[in-house]
Image 1 (cartoon, rainbow, N blue to C red):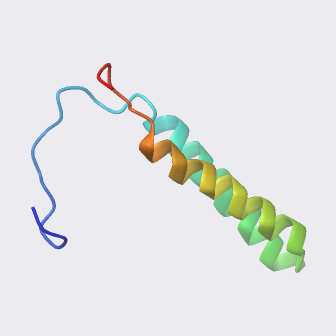
Image 2 (cartoon, rainbow, N blue to C red; image 1 turned 90 degrees about the vertical axis):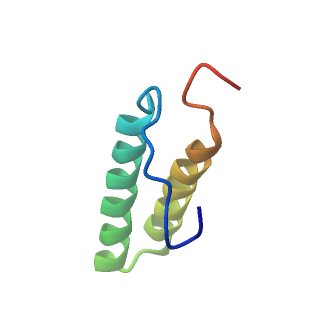
Length: 66
């Protein structure tokens, strides 16, 4: 499908890493907000790294197939 019309078909199995991905996003967002609130570049950089790990998990196969 196209960019504006995502494929809505169901997957055979749910994403086994979904809870981990959501946790990483929540932690990264909290660290980013703390970095902005306290104006700390180190916290903002840490948040970017945490969120990058979450993005990289997108490419890990979540089902039994490779």
